[in-house]
Image (cartoon, rainbow, N blue to C red; front, side, top):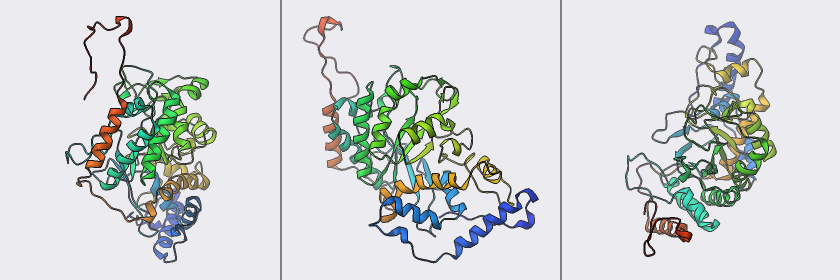
Length: 393
């Protein structure tokens, strides 16, 4: 559950006293709530349920959603829940090839084929099976947000992470296979996270380099896989480390707010890659900072002093209540869509979630991904009876 800071105006600097008094009144109101929870009516649409919940939330409770915290290790990211309103925790974990546990519990999750292998099947059914199998294991491990699939288009052959991306070199393939894999993940009740938005097509100097890509190329090459994800109602998108035309991806209003949210119609939330937040860029389209809140913490400290950028921006009026509500709804609505409010938390990081069924699914997908090449014109210096098996098998 979320902790509520003790706020008193007696020890607050005059410039922050008003904000502190406001926050204190919100906390008192929160503690006094004992009414019904109309947002728990399962038959209502997720959008309506999210609106009903938002109407009951204090500003503090909304802002709590915007920054991760480290109190729910060993997951790579988390936002603690809210007992008062029945908001479940978000537990995020890496998942490009299945649940990653950093070898703390080896052998307890299934090693799935890579995203690139899934793309090589050219089969949406295989992609959906891939997503479903991984998501079932995420639930068994207690995680409800899978950080995947990877949708970047392979444009740099020596990018060491091309194996993660389902698109291969083909934007349309990424559109189809990416959407199908998200259907599999979210059909099992786990929120998918499409990454990395956008132009994160090389690893070398990715935290400093600028991808200077014109608008036509964006829409024809790099955006289509994410359009497929949006069509599949993906719950979240991760913004990347790199710059785009000299603006950091996670604070780029053209690519985040204008293109992703307005032009492409994405209605979920944008989370930062881990440590990719350079400012409290909620006005530019960032909704959540991961893994912590160095920039996107909107709450004053115990003395009512704003220590973080978002808090200061709220205080000086540059971030409005409407913007805060929009970001909160973007996080809550996918949580309702995926049923997080309608089931009790379950699963354990130490659980063995493998099964013969999952192993068979992994083998089936891997078999479907095999590509047989004919050595026409003796392109490769191989004898006629030679067969070259490339990759890990």
